[in-house]
Amino acid sequence: MTLNEDQRRTVLTIGQLAATAGVTVRTVRHYHHVGLLSEPERDASGYRRYGAQAALDLIRIRTLADAGVPLARIDALLHAQPAEFASAVTEIDAALQRKIDQLTEYRRRITELAGGERLVLPAEVVAILDRMRGLGVSERRVRLERDAWILMQALDPVAMPRRIRDKNAGFDDPETTRLYLACDQSCDWDPHDPRLDRLIDDLDAREIQNERDGTGPVHLDLVVSRISEASPAWQRILDALAHRAKKRRTAAPGS
Image 1 (tube, rainbow, N blue to C red):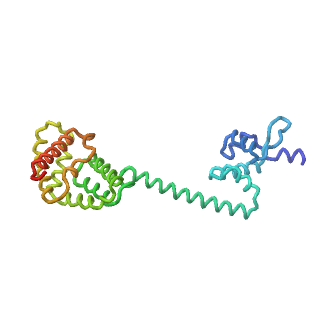
Image 2: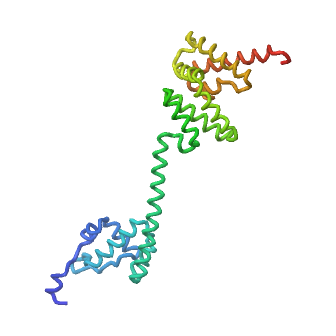
Image 3: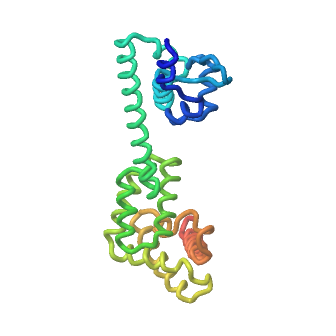
């Protein structure tokens, strides 16, 4: 090669090479160290100079590495025959598509997580929670209801279908719905608010009717198990109803 040809030859410093491929100088040196990229000899000035082939090789290495291909396999691919390389690229593309599909599913589930209930509860329960929102029940109360369903599903899944039927039947009944909304509104009342006395009487009357019908206590539908954490007023309701039910059982013949 003549001096004139050498002058016309495109050469790059290591910094220019790294910039061309969009990597750091440290990355280029790492690829030298692991044997992925040939390291040229230093020139008379003590610098390493790189040609166009080195830039092309580095771009291939970076692209494969960004796609998640292990460095050990990249070395084999760089030395593969065209047909073998094309087959490997097709396989890598398929693996990336599978990863995209998986991430898309994760994104869908994360989006649903904003609603909370759809990840862990059956559609019938989610429909009940949405129905509560439509009736004007507060989101705080809906979240407590959701948590109660999650616990029930974990602790007593066999009871879920019956409870779903009972809950929908309750919301079909105007009086039960009225009492449910009244309990929801009482959340922030003072435990000694006189309005609670009337609400307790109404709930107790409803519970007595359900006891006669052989159904479960209605206050369990109206006040969730986390009541003591959520509202002192709700705690008073629950305590009062439990006390009255106990007195009835004690006064009942044969008890």
